[in-house]
Length: 91
Picture 1 (tube, rainbow, N blue to C red):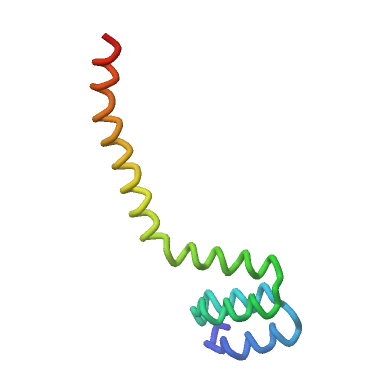
Picture 2 (tube, rainbow, N blue to C red):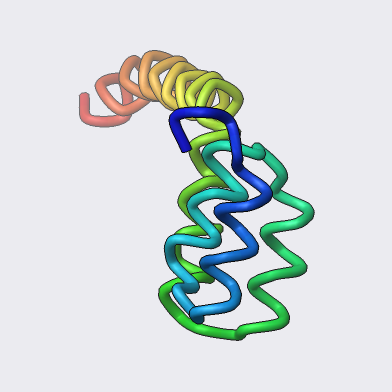
């Protein structure tokens, strides 16, 4: 694959039922989640689905990180608002 022959590698991996290698070519080199999804549906192997799921998560990492940070910030704000109320009720 050093020479960019990704489609050829994919064809060989499919022919010899090396499903994990095939899905790796699709998501890492060809960079096609859609084709990876089609392939996962076709072979329906847990290890293929797992690799596809990881690729999807990797592709959304920045977006997820922002979402997690915002949730954490909202949680901190809620704690800040609720602490004075809690202390006041304790008196």
